[in-house]
Length: 430
Image 1 (cartoon, one colour):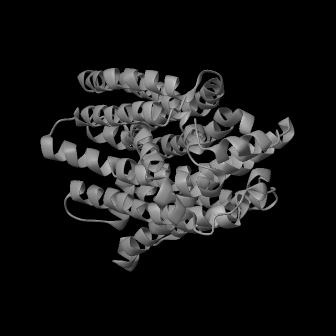
Image 2 (cartoon, rainbow, N blue to C red):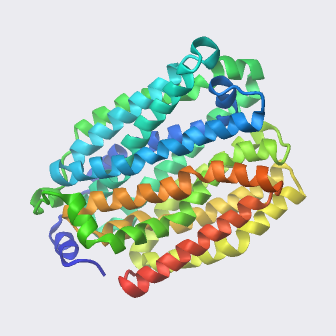
Image 3 (cartoon, one colour):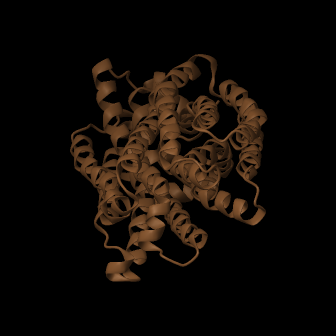
């Protein structure tokens, strides 16, 4: 389906042993998990962070400022994608992976120890914004480098190997939700706002050095070492592979909007459904477990039956059922209805997004693979992911309609379904 250089590289690349596969998955997943863990924690504790760093009289405005900082930090991701993606294609996957996890750890630590607005005034929100920009930049290079690293070590199992990228995101959601559920159910509001919210960020800061050590000890991919290097990967990508970048962006729309809607779910459950804060975290904990377990299974299946067939089937069902899921939650607001809706969305999301990393890796040759995947992934997550919590909150505030997120997700599904069909017809992806 793809370029000759992709096919040739795949044919030449050796098969990784079972033990080395486990080590490679751990090395890449721990960094990707740290990246997404921090994003999830920030979104989950948005209401607390808004009062700590962005205190204004109107609670809705305060929350929008916090989510706006979350969204604007995503503007650094495409820049990081170009910088770190190009660095990976020129200097190696290992070098980029080591650099990105170091920067992500620094950004997480900055938020964990940042004094409140009451303590240092306007420097507090500025510091939070700076830390988010650093995390956005480092996250920009994470997906492309780690996905390329996995599939280039085991090209015969691209779907299975690359799916661990998103499985690790499920693990992050599970862990962050566990923190949220425990902290909101055991601490008072004053304790949570005073110091409790810092605990998950401090935990994330401790993960970083472990990931850095593991990544420092891994070997570069044989495929990259053999491949002819591009002197200017960004220029080559934009000159010859723009359509493939657009396909990468469009295919992500459904999964990234669903992902960040789930991230916003604790806030939605508390503000729109009137449920206890812990209810939203329990629901997202279940979603994280589903995504962590189901994604590698579907990724393995995509190696057998094809990426597009699975994605189209899941996308169509998602489009048809996501709005009724929101109707159910709002008609019968309870932990049970919330769990049912979130579980269903998580099942469809995991099925749809499991094949995406492998599909994206097959779109680009080795010499521009990281740059292409990084740029497509980060533009998609910036435009359709990072702004989703802000867009949903703004839509609800403007219309007063709690079902607005369902319509938003239906539109996202349509865009992705159109893109995947386009890729099947124009680029002959399977």
